[in-house]
Length: 500
Image 1 (cartoon, rainbow, N blue to C red):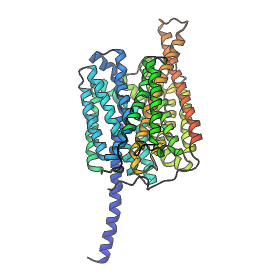
Image 2 (tube, helix red, strand yellow):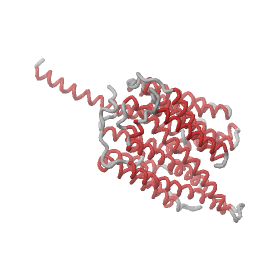
Image 3 (tube, rainbow, N blue to C red):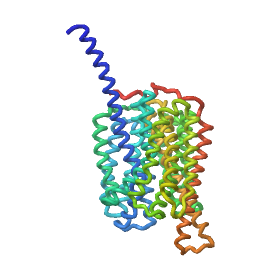
Image 4 (cartoon, helix red, strand yellow):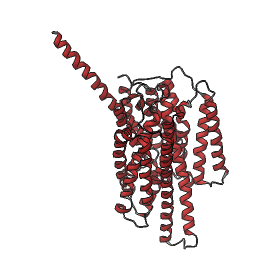
C-alpha cells in the first residue's frame, strides 16, 4: 500500500473516530433525557389519576395528599446521598440501578391493592429517583465539555426539567382516560426498558471520588433536614401554619440544615463541599432553580384546577392545553443556552427570563368564571414558557459547570434538591394563600350560590398567580444582584469528557 493511501486512510479514520464519539454523545443525551423525563413526570403524572385511584382503592380525601407527598419526601431528603453515591461508586451503576429500581417499584405501585401499598411504592420511587436524577445530570455534565455542545445538551435537559410536569399532566390524562389510573405508574416500566438498554451499551463507568469516603453524619443531617423542611411545608396544606406539625418541622429542618453546614466545614470527606456553594454564579443559579420551582407550581397546580373545574376540560384536554407552554419553553431554552447567555451573560439573560415569566403570570390573573382559553390562558402560557426557558436551562448549566469532576454528582443533586424544595415551598404557600382568598371572598356572601362559589375559586387561583408573579419578580432582582457581569468562562478541564 502506498504512503499516500496510508495517509489518506489514517486521516479518514481520524475523522470518523471523533464523528462516532460525537454521535455517541447525542445518543447518551437521549438516554439521560429519557431517564430525567421519567423522574420529572412522576411529580405530576399521578395527580390527574388520583380521583380514579381513590375510587378504586377506597382511601379518604385526607390520605390522598400522601400519594404525592411520599414521593416528594423521599426524593428531596435522599438527593444529596444519591449524588454522592454516584461520585463514589460510579455514575453508570448509580444510573442503571436507579432506573431498574424505579421501574420495579412503579410496577409495584401499579399493582397496588390498597392505600398502604401505593404509598410505599411512591416513597420507593422517590428514593430511586434520588439516585437516578443526580447521576443523570452529572453524566450530562461530564459528557459534554465543548461549550456549544454543552449549551445544546443543557437546553434539552433544562427544557425537560421545566416542562416535564406539564407533559406528566398530559400523559396522566391520556392514560387515565384511555386505559386505567394504574398505567400512570406502569408507563415507567416501558420508559425504563429503553433507558436501561441505552445506558448499558453507551455509558462508561467513572468513579471520580473513588478515594473519598461517605460522610455519614452529613448524610443523616441533610436527609433529616430536607425531610423536615418538605414535611413541614406539606403539613401547612393539611393543618395550618400555627400547627406544631408545621412550624415545628420547619424549625427543625432549619436547625438540622444549619448543623449540616457547620459539619461540612469540619468533615474530612464532606458530603457537600462548601467550595461548590461559594462561587457567585453557582449560588445564584441554585437560588434561580429554587424560585422557578416555587413559581411554576402556581401554573401547573391551579391552572389544572381552573381548566377542569371551571372550564370543564377533560384530563386529556387539560394536558393538551399546556403544550403551547412546553413548546415555548423548549424554543426559549435552546435560544437561551446557545445564543443569549453566551453573548450577554447570565446577569442580563436570567433576570430577563424571570421578568418575562412574572409578566405572564400577572397577565394570567385576568381569568374569569367563564373565560375563553384562546384569549385568557393561551397567550399567557406562551409568555410564561418563554420566560422560564431563559431561566431554568441556563441556571442548571451554570450550577453544575466548572465543578471538580469528583463533585459533579453532589452538585447535580443540589440542583435537583433546590427544584424539589422550591416546589414544596410553592405548593404549600400557594395552597394556603389560595384557600384564604376563597374564604375571604365568601365572607358576607351566599356561599350556597353556585356562581358565587365559582367566583370564589377563581379568586383563589388569581391570588396564587399573583404570588407566583411575585416569586418571579423576586427572582428577577436576586438574579440581577447575584450574577457576575460578563459571559461565564468555560472550564473544559473541570469535568473530563467521558471516554468513548
